[in-house]
Image (tube, rainbow, N blue to C red; front, side, top):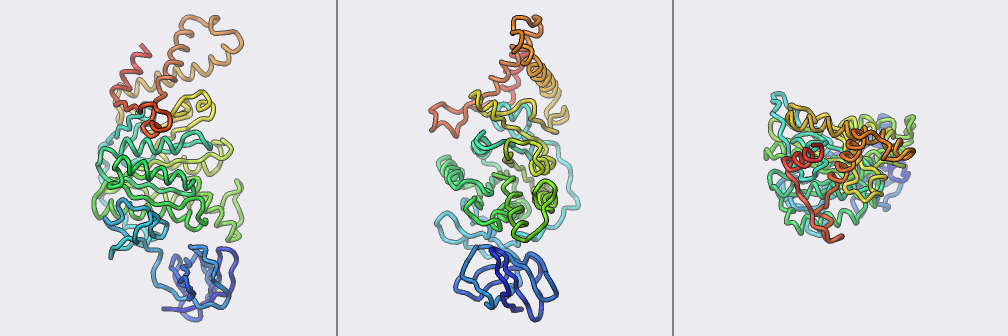
Length: 433
């Protein structure tokens, strides 16, 4: 193996000089210190010097220390031994148990072979039991759904409810990637899954906000690597939950700052689009199995036009927008029924009955929004009878889409509710009629 020496250290960036053979991009280097600190090669600065990133934030390095190339990239353990475990970006245990014992490993930066004979299958709708999602953003196997909202509007609660409702079916495997979120939320999710006896079908990866940006930027890719393994080798259908995709962009942005990259116009890293695209393209389906992903996206300052939010949204099939105004009215989930949209809400996927109903509901809600400002000035009694009737129907619809969650039963004592798609459609038909 080729050997080099540390020439400079600046925060997480370590410059290493090699006398002979240079390591490859993405290769792991091991520092000759007590902790055997792993460094990952980020880029070559010259014919003999590479810039590396300190994955573990170890502080026991110093200039002149010897570094040895491992000849391998960042490899995580794969196999059935990982099911029910909580792992970090390098596949190490976070649940207090022994490291995963397996002889199978995969390089997280190495892309799996591309499928050449993938057949487009008939869309399969998965019922979530949540009225507003099943009606406005149908949950289709192998597609991507985004839950967008600012801080404290219920993104994580809605995600946990989806995990609870869909994972109970027991078909396939559930994955959860905690990217840069609160440690408390990860702990609560673990307890929720354990109490519901769902850990036996779940793999969890956490790179929470206490970790450095290197680990936070890798955690989603590590989780995706294991999901690809189960999809391709075990022919499993995967449910992939990522909380929070904005924190992935944020971690990449922090790294770009550390690496002295010139920011783009919106203040984000210049590689923002390729960073998002590389990860999103790997959350895909092939002839072996499907990966259905649910991704939460934090909206900074409640600004939906933020460049990172827009870049992530363009990769999704459906977008559920959570609104602070609606949350303040006590409606849960606090979904903005007008801004929420889905490219999967078509007659071919959901059927004519569902599609026609969705068009009528959207028309009523749009009319409700336009009438609200008029009512504020002249009052509801001054409206025409037809306008008054439509306004009343829209108000009923907004209340109808409010629903109690199973995951909040212990907190508020209100039993959770599950509605089939047929029940949801019937309820809407009754209101509109």
